[in-house]
Image (tube, rainbow, N blue to C red; front, top):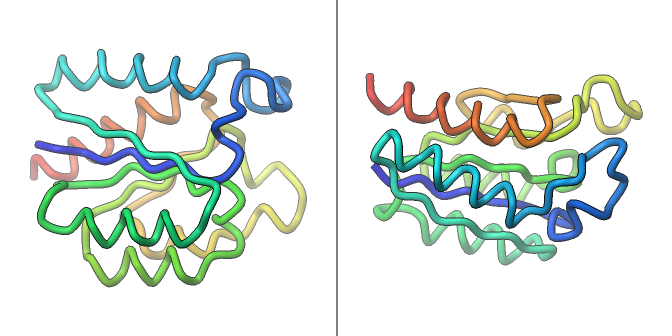
Length: 144
């Protein structure tokens, strides 16, 4: 089983960006943690982060036939990207949307996800553990 972890804009700043909302772990810290957890389940993982919407769309399109599933933190694109939503629908790869913070307890504009309806589910508000929960969710879904 091979899973792609996709990360949207500003997640490259984790560890220093608003640590009260996003924690002190860097994206690299989270990746290392997930690699360790994934190895216990015999899952291969790849990680990709971009601040550019079109690059994320390209990565989703390139994933078809390579990855069994995607775990994605679209970050700010959650609330704005019809393009990412359409790419997910086009490739038909099971995807779990994740967020470090609880988007439903934040500003009004953050409560709406354009990308979630293209996903099998959404995990939000568990900090870095959202990534682990996303891994477990996609693993369980694909094992059916």
